[in-house]
Length: 77
Image: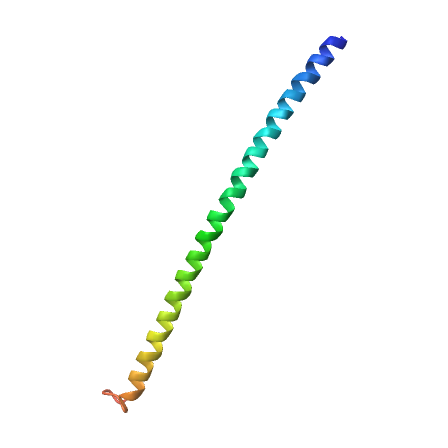
């Protein structure tokens, strides 16, 4: 009976050690991936910000152009 308990405990320890090693490997992989993900997100934010700035500049230029036309061709502006 004691021998069976020792065997069961050894098996449980082996499985727990294997699980711990797996989670440690996963943690290392995730820590390495965080940097790449963060850099990718920063790049996307920079791209969107640049496009938004360009769109705002284009809108401002078109608004100034429209206001510079004076009365407008259809009398609406």
